[in-house]
Each structure stands twice: as C-alpha cells, then as structure tokens.
Amino acid sequence: RPQVLAPGACLIRGVARAQAPALLDAIRDIIRQAPLRQMTTPGGGRMSVGMSGCGVRAWISDAAGYRYEARDPLTGKDWPPMPGILRELAHECASRAGYDGFCPDSCLINRYRPGDRMGLHQDRDERRDVPIVSVSLGVSAVFLWGTPVRSDGVRRLVLNNGDVVVWGGLSRLAWHGVAPLPQAHHPLSGEIRYNLTFRVTA
Ligand code: MD5
Ligand code: FE
Image (cartoon, rainbow, N blue to C red; front, side, top):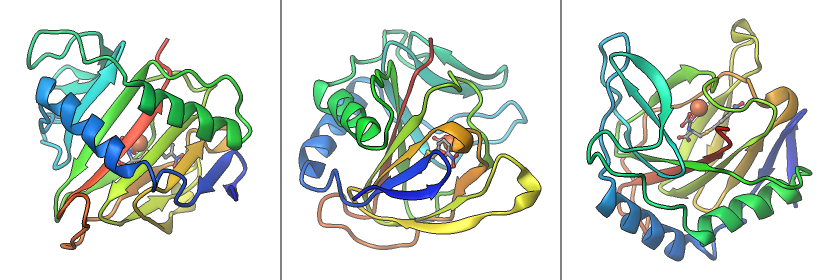
C-alpha cells in the first residue's frame, strides 16, 4: 500500500480516511483552546494559512523569526496536549513507511480556505534526522514538492482526504509548498482543507 515517491518519501493513500471524522473532531477541540491565527513572517508578510498546534511545543512565526514555543503566544497558555488518536496515527504511518519508533512531540495544524496557499520552503526548525508525517483532511489540494536542491523545480501531487505522506531520509529537506486551494466542497469539512504535520522538536 505505501508508495515510494522519492528516496525517503512515502505516500499512503487514504490510510486516515476512516478516522477522518474523529480526527476533525480532535482538531476542532484543539482550535477551541488554541485558536487558528495567520502568523506574521520575519519579512513582514502575513501567511494566508491559519495555524495552531498541540503537543509539548508548537511552531510559530513572528517578526523575530521562526521557532518552536512551549506556550501559545496568543493565549499565554501551554499548547493543548497531543490527543492519542493523533499521536498513534503518526506513529503507525511512520512505521508502515519504514520508520520505527517515531514519537512526535509537536503537531502543527494548517487550515486552508479557498485561495490560501503555502509558498515553497524547507522545514528546517526541528529535528532533521527524523521524518515529518503529514496528514491531509477535507478538500483536496495540489502539493508541490521538489528535492533538497531548489533549482531542481517541483512536481505536483494531489493530496486527498485521508492521504498521509511520510517525509524522511533524503526527502526530509526537500523544497515544498501548496498551490492555492480551489473553491470546492467536502462533506466532512465544507470548503476547508486541514493538514496536520507531526514533528520531533527535541
Ligand atoms: C501542508 N505543510 O500541506 C504542508 C504539508 C508545513 C507544510 O509544508 O511546513 O506546515 S508538510 C509537507 C512536508 C514536510 C516536510 C518535508 C516535505 C514536505 N518535503 O520534503 O516535501 O500544509
Ligand atoms: Fe513545510
């Protein structure tokens, strides 16, 4: 079932589909406690994607830069704990992709509305010797992914509700982004796409 996209990168189509309603319930519970917000970038821009997180630490961006913080700057409180259903899904998918013992301490929640996008970037702010597990929920998106060399360009990959990608090994530092979300409808999420990324920060 797992499909190798590139060395270290593994796509598991639909693996989270049956759990999607429960995963969306867990997301809604987290964002009641740690509201979605559009973060500011060090360059002075504002991201279109709405973000929140859970776990021991979560990723933030502001005028001072990108980093992981143990407290939500919006509420001043700890991030909500990572629900078992999320941690166990990430652990199971990493294991199926060949990465045993994946224990994420952070989950970033990305909320895409129609038109929201994510520019090309590398994920460099957390442990790079372990994979990132990415779970797509709701409306389908076009994911853009390349190699660790920016000039290699990108390929396009449609990610649907319940698809999981495990990005490790030689693909861990690949350049990637998300094309503007089309206006579309999904029965579980309306016009929204959520993406969960599970990471190890310490
Ligand atoms: C998303 N999120 O769909 C994507 C999925 C982010 C982000 O990019 O940083 O929040 S994560 C996809 C990912 C992670 C690490 C490496 C690679 C892709 N990759 O090598 O292509 O909202
Ligand atoms: Fe990323």
